[in-house]
Image (cartoon, rainbow, N blue to C red; front, side):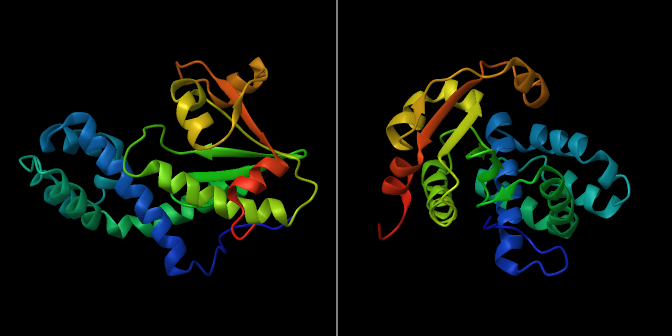
Length: 215
């Protein structure tokens, strides 16, 4: 099985950038949700409490952004402030990836093999920040994996995102929504999600026809 994976002791700059972009997306989503610097900083302080308690200088620097209400300035500069944590963030993500057999395609998409199917995971369910373009690029990378592994018969997604954004899933991504989702699977993977969990799939040949470059 061909893997798109990260070497523990040799993380290249472009792979590290995936995680930097993930962090930027999280900070941007946080700011957009609250709409101001004060509440965004409070949320960051709470989410990073354990880390910031041991880094008083960074904590004090973040405090200065409570009155910054310009989204681009907040996202850009706060991302730079938190740059020292990117290395540990990458390490933790590597641990999670190895434990779950999940492989990262880009900052919004990952996958793992389940039987003769590939299951994809979208990190952000909102149609914002060019997510449609990012998902498409990730699926094009995945198509190379599928093309090189004839045992893969189907690509599927199981998520509340399928329920919330059916047009994105069907019209943009070319998947078919349908099929039962096992209750045990939902309990194991979506216990904290309130939305309805649905399955979407696309068969191998259709997937390759749509996403394999130079096909």
